[in-house]
Image (cartoon, rainbow, N blue to C red):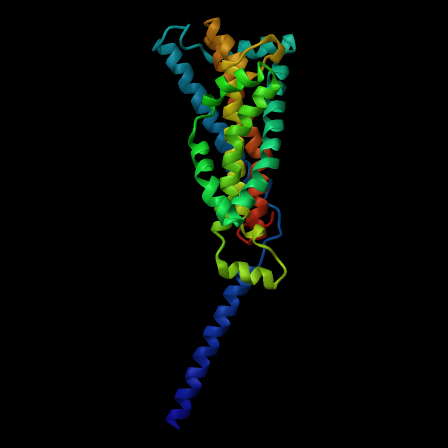
Length: 291
């Protein structure tokens, strides 16, 4: 009788454990479909960066009022805003931005078209990895500005030189990102994916996306270095040339304007392109609730 009660109690405990496990799995599988309230979005995503920018501007203005540096070294926010307004009235503000953004995006797309198959080749072929894998790692650690002088000598002062510098800076990052993504996929997942008709590329997406972000960062920095060093009327005036013009004219307000525009473009590209891609990858893995 006691044995029967013990067995029943044990079965009940196992049943409760199984029910709890199933409930936990159901909770993990449950995806929230409701949209995030506007007020919550405002307070969690919009308000913090606005407050941070306002705080930086306030500290900046206080430093100007305190006279920690002469005006020609530390312009006031109003002086920089005057540069923005003047460029807007002259119709050159968007020309500066578009000249650099169009070059950067075109160079990045070219780097993507070259770096992706190169990364797949290095990841899949052992001999290729042994031959050029260390070279890619070395190129990734090489400052992009080092390629500007030889690119100018080889190609001259033109857009081809700009694209060459971008490619040399971005292709290794994209290729290495894809290689790392493929290497980080567990073999068990690869076998399970093949059984279900999938490939290892989907599992490599997080590493590949990280390589793309780093590749864009290298593209943008490489372009700015090329525009600062190589200046010519035929090249137009991009953000790098604007920064160099401010230095040549000893206009710190123009220098600050160029720095802020470069920063704003970088943030905008991340928010408009890479952040949605990251959310999509996380959501496809059940790591982010739908909203």
